[in-house]
Length: 329
Length: 160
Image 1 (cartoon, helix red, strand yellow):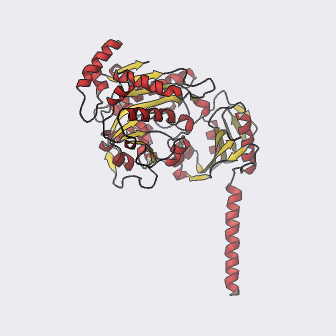
Image 2: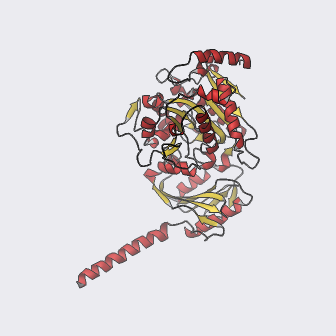
Image 3: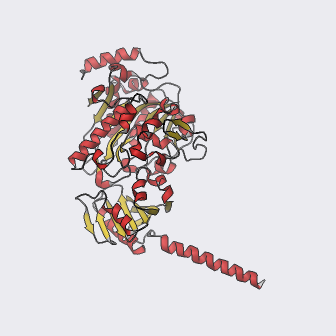
């Protein structure tokens, strides 16, 4: 792993090469052969009783983004991630209920940094498939276009595209929030065990962007997860992941099972969703081993979707640990 | 006129009997205050088997393979603080309810006297009674949460 000076030097060089549409691409440029993934932890994030110290979340976010971009000042760092004058969609996950939804404190911290980086409040859309899931996760619905909008696809005026989009095995009706409201999507998934896919994190979170996710669960969601993420309307907009691994479920997911709840107290950040998912999968497997549980594969839930997502037909990122530059801070 | 009134009366009796019967048979959710400290904080939502994914997408298949027929759910709050959800799964038979109850059981599970079989954890209680499986989940931990959940579980059991 590079030392900090080398890292910053490379980051600065990479910044010169940034594209005009989006300033992302920095991570890949640090070492073109590797995908960078930052795992930022704060052991004091949850108390012994499991209460989240919300004041620490923004600091953890800042550390993660600083490590990823090589910029210590949060505003400068965020300016390198998001484009100006575009609508930024934050795809949260509210399905499991409050304890294992994308934490509101994280979403608010990101919104604040976006605002400081020059994104207007009316250009931020926090979204999920269902209004009820957002509300149960603690979010307040807002459709005021002068403020941060918090909306569900099932709300009046949104819905799904009538014309399906297709790639490989999947043919789906995408959320109009994705197709019509957002220019640039930051994915805020939650790391969890998943009854079908083995693990759910970045790539799987876009099951919340389609009308019938239940139809894509066969064969451990493989190749459906990879195929879905290759649909151009999604692939072209999905640019960055800030994974919420502050609280997680290592068994019995994706719904909330308090008996299998644990606190990794981490954010997992990166541009390569396959590398992010690979990293998250390994974290879940380690926890399962610690708890005396069998591997996901031996429970009939192999994470083969990662292999498919990384293959030449999909090329969504890498699941090769030798090509992942993991930075744990 | 007489016959019209007779027909109307019959229709009224049928409607009343049908809806009344449904309510009595399919409402396992204790009303606010029926169990000390517990308030029912949401409407009951009901999902047919084919729509269960709308409630627990990604988790629905295991219930479908165990023969779920319908699922009802409602939110509760204990003493205005502790939030919990009560899920009632009506399965085709008792074997289906048993299959789900046993899945994912850990060594921390305590056996409790509820229905035909019951398990309790610090933040959840699950039990089965005939073809019905009930899961009560609290969203946070509190010193008396298990006792409170058990009280609510007994209230649900009494209505099954």
